[in-house]
Image: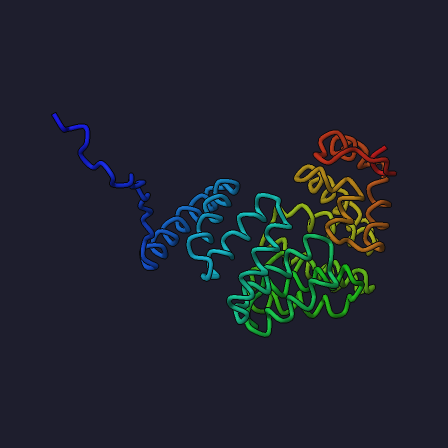
Length: 287
């Protein structure tokens, strides 16, 4: 008896929940571990999952620019350019001297068809990392889009000088030279590419067009053969719209339309038109 009055007069005390807050070093270690997992997923092509882990990384270590760069790349590969831009902006605030951040932002602007914005970003990145061949290639593409053909040629030449096997940069030198009316030099560049990359459909078709423009029976026979081979390698090049997206100038595209209208190429053109993976369009060569 008397058990019921134990504690009588003492107010009830509510339990206070205990929340464990890990030390900063533990938070950083956890964040970096998650970042490594995100990077592995990104290498495996699982961009959406990588973006989720990278987002967790920046929550754990918000002041580490590496996490924001990783998040930007994952968001970009997940086709979320707006989120990628936000992540890059945060990374740039944390580490403004990181060339990769400026170059990534410039490449993203280029992907969003904003070459005027891309050029200064790429130039700033190249000031910090002047031996980045890929950045010179992006800069050249932006300059083509702005009709700055002379500057574009210089950028592509710098890219291939830094990396002699950079066949895409050499190919684009040919594209620019053709538009400048320097067809023989364009052909020289495209021959150089085909030694490095014999199955490059774009270069093969451009080479065919250059030979057709140069004239002569032997050149015309070779042009027909190369054009047929190029369309078999990548049927999308039958579409003028696709060639324009690949930054082919009007002079080269007009010459290509004329070549693909030749009767000898009708079967190859018809086959490519049927196999092109882009939505169909009405073109003279694809009728």
